[in-house]
Image (tube, rainbow, N blue to C red; front, side):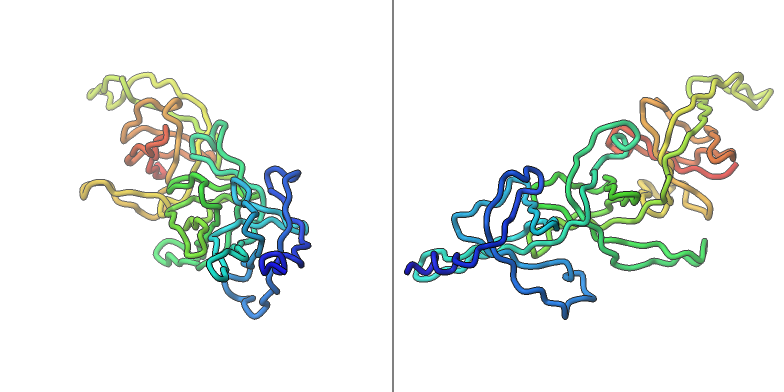
Length: 282
């Protein structure tokens, strides 16, 4: 009997393309290693298939009701012929959505399977006694993931801060947990294009505009581009707004958010059709 055929005898587990469930193939899962219960590898297993099997295009499979992200392939061979292909697979938590902040505030983005695993908590005792979680998020190789995007899984949002390729062949996004319900209505008073009246110390009549913005902790997404940039002080927030809502922000612009007045301290381009505003209670 051919060794490759013999090794496929127990390929009895049905694996389906998670995005196109009608496309299936057969394979085997390794035995579950429960000794890894406390590590980030707790949701990883090995999928073994015949060399003739090609993984789905987006590298996500459903096996016995659970969804797995498929990583790196390793080939077992004998006398120069491939006998088995083995893949590292990482369990996906849910079908989420990956978006830029612009897409989060409007529409668009990519629906994809992902998961988030806690890595550590950080403390900022100078401003709060709270703990802030830092996570690893997981994506199939080939998904267009980059720093600055927001991953939504259920009711939770994660701000991607860095992306790297893990040794398992799965993309890993280092991410901060964003505050819940962090899209809120803004009433913005822009001074752009208005002449300053030194006698009255005012800009005359300002017409407010109302739109939605996304707020988050300033510490999770700041970037000091120059040494003279205004520094963070306790209570500052980062407010991300669409450029279509605020064409030209200025330091000193004011806004109303959560029923309080805020002032724009500084701003920068997020390079994805939005402004990032550093705002402070007025």
